[in-house]
Image 1 (tube, rainbow, N blue to C red):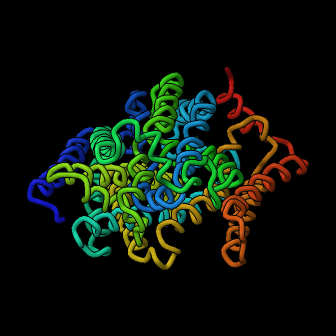
Image 2 (spheres, rainbow, N blue to C red):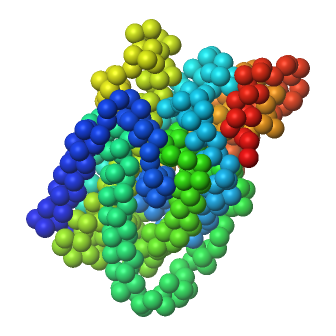
Image 3 (spheres, rainbow, N blue to C red):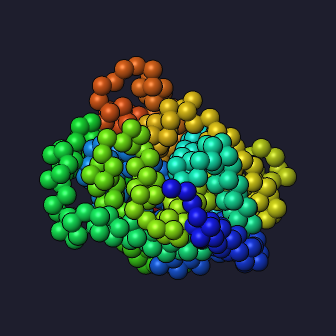
Length: 488
């Protein structure tokens, strides 16, 4: 089955909507503060939806669809459930601190406070490391949506990468954070429609609503279990900790949603909305992927299961809607990431390279040029995705393993209990985690849980041990900062 003219009209309309929002947002940006943190005026419901949809991409419909096809329900347990749980548990902790950092210390980038909390060197190491991490992470997202395009249209992967990356590049560069969050909302509505269409289409082609419970009898018994090797309890616990760090600010774009909130209470409400969506929506979203082995038995390439299912079940027009929703997932996350990375480069890296880029001289032009160049680099990485272990390798192995060394000093650094952890602890934590990652990539480790979590574990232990063992006087400015952002 090929796409019809009606499908192409739906997809084209989606892209035009994204560009229109980008152009509209262009006129809302008066300065860099508007471009990077929406002037601190992001309402909680918009922030919560943006936080949610920015947390996953079209990779869910490729790499995670493959896991859902081969291993079943476990994908919800170790991915969506752990994310929702960690966000809800910490809703009154990290979101509140991010807002206070903006209000008290006027940050626009999640890394700006690190120069005060540790020192410039620590901030720069984390900035450069994080930018490198996101090059790979975003590259994987472009590659994943290109695979879906290939399934639906036959377009080659390089061309698909250039299309998905190029369209996003335009509206992100134009509109900044306002464009990102407004397109996030539009994309969320499209995701809901596309996801529900697929959900009901699968129910119709099985045994109706009761198949939600009975279809598992037609699948391997392990597919209905919460843990299915190699995604066992240890792996789920590893991702629980990884997601705790990632979704509370370790993924910098998600920290930006809280930083941009007007008040502590609105940031908390945004977190709770995002957390609830993670607990509920993936149950509907993953259902077609869990049912795919029944409708598409013995599929040679499981990563194509969602795309093949769409072509099999849906009529003209609705296929276009689902494809638009897949683009929406990817563009939500990547545009959010790129806007935040642009803020880090513009406010944390460039001022330390040249005084021409001092914070009081940063212009919208600088922000837009930075955004454009970084997006271009992610597209180049995407074109080489097979070299880095494929999409699943980029998402789970590279991202899961590297997020710890980047996030541990940042998130633990805003907790008063770790006030004795200074620059030595932070830098040692980063390099110990990165070194562990290199080692795990070059030796055979049979446990996937240990392979993914070992860099994170080492980073955490090194940070805590050195902080407790080191004899140092905590600087007054660090005490004052922690007191300001932690008081009830």
